[in-house]
Amino acid sequence: MKKDTSLFLDEAKINIKAGDGGPGIVSFFLLKGSHKKIASGGSGGKGGDIIFKATKSISTLYGFKKKIHFKAENGQQGMPNNRQGRKGKDCIIYVPVGTIIKDNGVVCADLNEEGAQYVAAVGGIGGRGNASFVSQQRRFPGFAEKGEKVSDRWVSLELRLLADVALVGFPNAGKSAIISKISAAKPKIADYPFTTLTPNLGVVSVDNDSFVVADIPGLIEGAHSGIGLGDKFLRHIMRSKLVVYVLDLEVFLRNGEIDLINTFKILRNELKLYDTSLYKKSYFIVINKIDLVSQQDKVLVEKLENIKRKLRMISKRQVLQISAVTGKGLSELIKLMYEKLLKEKQINEKLTDEKILSEKLLFEDDLKLRKLNLSAEVKPLKQLPKKTKGAAYKVYSLNSLDKDLKKKFDLDKIEVIKQGNEYIIKNENLERMVSMTDLENEEALEYLKDKLKKMGIGDKLKKMGVPIGSTVIIKDLVFELLD
Ligand SMILES: Nc1nc2c(ncn2[C@@H]2O[C@H](COP(=O)(O)OP(=O)(O)OP(=O)(O)O)[C@@H](O)[C@H]2O)c(=O)[nH]1
Ligand SMILES: [Mg+2]
Image 1 (cartoon, helix red, strand yellow):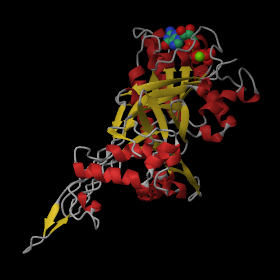
Image 2: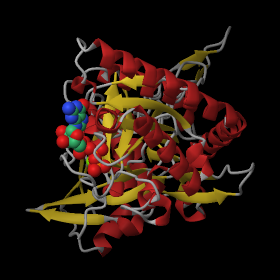
Image 3: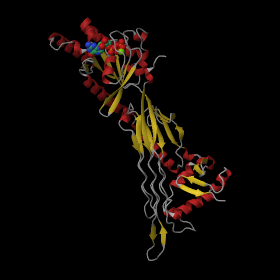
Image 4: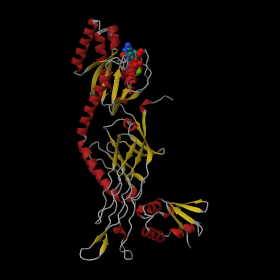
C-alpha cells in the first residue's frame, strides 16, 4: 500500500492534573456580649479544570516536546465567617485545530473546529467547612472535610498535519532538498524529474514556534490537464497560507533567462487554472542552486541580479536566492516564511474576532454549568447551532446535567475485592467520601460512620456476600462489618 503522507501525524504525550479541592475549615463566630458561638468555617474552593482548546494560531504539537506537565491550580481553603475559598484557576491547553485527544488509546475528543474545547480533567470538589455540618444534634461541629484530591494522568495528542507553507516548482528544482534541510523530513532527493511522487510534510521550528511545510511533486506546463503527474497533489496545499515558488537556476544556466522567468509564469498559470484561491494566496519566490554561480563570475552574477529584478517587477514580491546544498540563504528563507505566516494569521484573526468573542461567552456559561458536577466522565453535550457564517461550535461538557447522576451515589457500582480475610471496597463516591474525611478527628469519623450507615452500606455488603465480622477497607478507613 502506498504511504499517504497527507496523513502525516504529529504526536505528543502529556501529563495533566486538575487542581485538588481546597479544605474546609473549622471556625466559630463568637456573638458579641454573649457566650454563644456559631460554627462558621467556610468550605474550600473547587480545584481548577484541565481544558483543551483548539486554535488556528498553532499548527503543530511541537510545543509539547518542551512542556509535558500541565497542572491546574488547587482550590483555596475555606475562610472564617462562612466564606468559601477561592476556586483554583483552570489550566487551558491550546492545541492546533484538528487535534485528537486519546486516553489509553481511546479517542475522547476530536477538536476539529476553531474554539472547540474539551474538559479532560475536572478539579476536585472543595471540602465542607464546619458550618455545613450543623444540625439539631450537632450544634458545634469540631470538624471539616478535606478537599478532594485528584490524580494526574497521561493523555496522547495526535494531529494530522496540514501544510502552512507549500513549495511549488518544476521537477528537479530542489523542493525536496529544501524541505530536508529546513525540517526533519527525509524525502527522496535525486537528479531526475518526478522524484517525489506523493507530498512530504516537514515541521520547521522557529524560536518557540513551528510551522508545517509541504513539498509536493513537481508541476509542468499542462499539469492541469494531466500532463506529468498532473495537478492532483495541489489539493494537499489548498489549506496552506503561503506558497513559495521554487525556481531552478540550472534552467537559466542551460536555457537562459527567458526560460527561467517562464517557469515562474507557467507555475502561476497552473495554479490559476487549478483554483483561483490557490493562485491568490500570499507568495514569494525562491531561486535555488545559487552555488552553481561563482561570485567571481561578475557577468553571471550581474545576469542573475537582472533576473531577480525582472521577477520582482512581474510579481511585486520578494525574490530570495538560496542553495539547499550549501545552506546559503536558508535561514532568511525560514524567517521570511515565518513572517508571512504571522501576517496571514493576523489577517485571519481579525476576520474571526466576532466569532472568538461569542465563543468566550459560551465558554464561561459552560463553566457555570459544570459547578454541580459529581463525576469526571465526559461526553459531548450538544452541538450548538451555527451562529455566524462559517462559525460552528462544538462544546464538550460534563454529563453533570444528567438527572441520573444527581442520584447521590450509585451503589450498584460497588466492587468488592477479597484479599485474605479483608474486603477492599471500590466505589468512586465512597472512596471520595473517605478521602475527604479527616480520619484523625473523632467527630469527623463519627459523622462518616453515621453517613455510611444511613446509606445502608453494611446491608449492601452483606447482600454481596461479605461475612459479618470481616474487616472492610475503603481507602484509609478500616472497619469491622457488624451484625
Ligand atoms: N547544486 C545544487 N543542486 C541542488 C540544490 N538543491 C537540489 N539540488 C539537486 O537537484 C536535484 C533535484 O533535487 P530534488 O530536491 O529531488 O528536486 P525536487 O524539486 O524535489 O524534484 P521532484 O521531486 O522531481 O519534483 C538533486 O540532484 C539535488 O541534489 C542546490 O541548492 N544546489
Ligand atoms: Mg522532490
